[in-house]
Length: 145
Image (cartoon, rainbow, N blue to C red; front, side, top):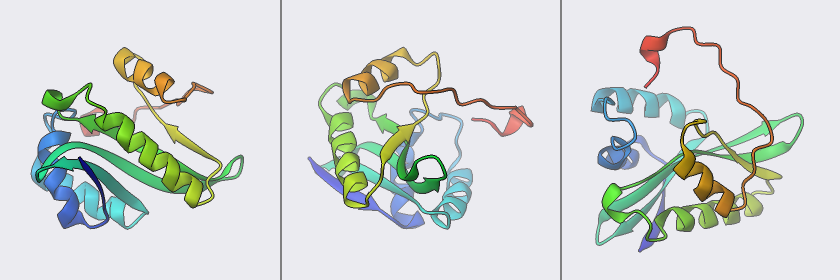
């Protein structure tokens, strides 16, 4: 398995098939449009490949907040269903932790739906802990995937 960082929209479009396991209604054109905006705002991706097949993908944001300074945010870790429980997710998290430390980040953060118990178990095992709530005020439900 090899881990590769993706920084361009064209590179990231290669993750579409794996990403649709999490977002089955995501259309390619919508994905391209979202990525075009996101890349301009410090978004990148990390993928794990084996023999040119993408096994997993994670979105990455580097940001700053008043309360914590520089941080790395994991934005979706998606592992292809046929390759789950083989260390792909852990490989990405370990790499992102190294990246965060190298960039001088104070922490890594992520969001997880309250009903996603498998993800909670995975993230607990990777050293994450819930420290607050991510509140939302829904303005347009049709735009939510």
